[in-house]
Image 1 (cartoon, rainbow, N blue to C red):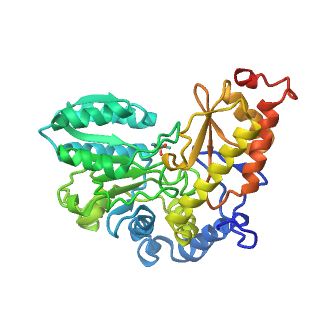
Image 2 (cartoon, rainbow, N blue to C red; image 1 turned 180 degrees about the vertical axis):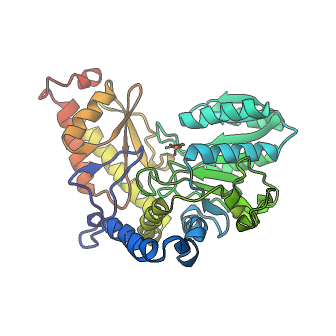
Image 3 (spheres, rainbow, N blue to C red; image 1 turned 30 degrees about the horizontal axis):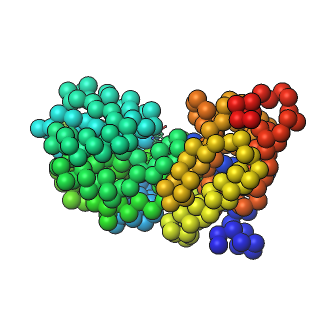
Length: 398
Ligand SMILES: *Cc1c(COP(=O)(O)O)cnc(C)c1O
């Protein structure tokens, strides 16, 4: 197991003595990160200055790190690039490009449970390209594809519901899209680094995700993009920056898309953030995605069992079957935001999502079983007892 005594893995992360179970962004950094950044600044930047872009491989880093990440995502090399933007911009790029692959179809289909930015971007893309936006809840999404799918250009979905953690099967949904001729776009933000996504085996078309959740890339880590090799020569991105040009340094006045995944690049990448993401990926790759998944599943199960035993007032908002959940568990608790703050005051970081969800995420390499026990004990103190009259957060669950 990854955190049996002696392996020392969680000790490799600088936790500040806190329990990190927040699923929205930042986990703790590796203790070696600062030294790695210093190395790049001192040995590369300071030493070679601008020449480091070529001499230290900086220009290739978005693809090199992309190939590393590809191993976690179940993709062969040459299909993932660290796009250097936010998930939102990368999603925009992917959605427009996907719609352009189906110019003759009117509908852009999105899951209603999507993360807000996905809904906002889809609405904007539909407006921009004069398509019809169809927003359907989970079952309606499948139903729409199955019964009216021949109108669908692009279907956008996530393998993990960001609120409840409920999974959507990537292979089944992608196959359903393909059976009606629609293009699939996946947002892997809550899956990358904690769930096998098997992008190649599942026949996924395009996928995006952020670098700062389970991948641990740090504050504002750049997002990634996957484009299946079979689509790379035809896919036409709206963001046509010079780094996506076939010959960026020719400084041509006309855009000619690069071959392969490089055409998805836009401009100068955020080098230091890329280095931090690269550094975060190493222990994840060493563990392998199956072990990461098994570990997150085990920690999630421990949490649910302890909550059922010690915090009977909390209602599980996630599926009880661990195979139907991603890397996090959500509890339904009135005043979840107050509970979040009360837990934080006691050193346990989780996150609340309106109106009443408390999300608890289990980053496999930096979370211990003791962290889980401590979190449940503190949760019990905060909402399970009457000890803290200042917190009225628990009322709804008693
Ligand atoms: C966290 C998250 C994002 C974040 O988007 P940014 O533009 O990187 O802030 C997007 N989509 C999903 C599903 C997320 O969970």
